[in-house]
Length: 296
Image (cartoon, rainbow, N blue to C red):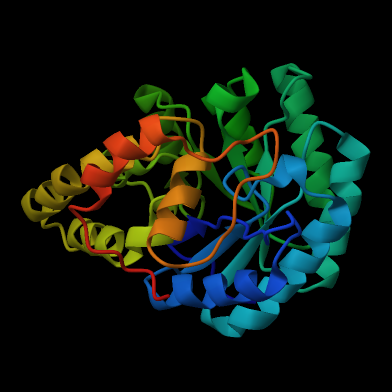
């Protein structure tokens, strides 16, 4: 099994002009992302428009991407939603197509208790031998998974880390400080990678690395080399594009940015809508300040 890695890209999902999933372009994008610094790819997450994809589409996409990248990068499959039994079944199907791990997202809409979250993820993890990465994203789910719940789950052998997008730095720091040494904390927000890694976080599940992966990796390497002042300069340089990519709902901006770079990724699926002129007129002067790392 491929090592998961520090720089994981939340890969967008290419669609063709008819709105069908474009598997050929997905394979091409996956290999291009690996060439531009990604250690692994998260497939079927929020950035990948998973709510608008069928389970059959997801399973085929997991398989196609893993076949495309082979052992050059890990493939982490987003297999969970607010349907517990369906999450188990999709996780088992993902294991059959040789993905390297699972993204276990806090359920939206249900708003379970902390004990409910613990039992939900415990049972899913027990249904598969794959390593699981928890995903706490209160801005999407309206529910925060507390440090206490994450630390309980960290005791389960194949729950190996958490993607933390709560922006609650005391909570994130507590998880880093009190979790087992082999439990990894990835930032869930590009603009927080610097801060989280500086207090001991492992890496980032990045949206921006769809286009600037090598530049993000440079910043991360500077942190790991303990060259914090140079890393801080890189963080400040990248901050405007990190922010601009979330001016409207993700993945609308990043999909626009990938298309603008010359890589054909298509439009988002409804209910998402492509970036309008009001957005692009403000966004273009920002992105034009950066080199694009993605090979097209």
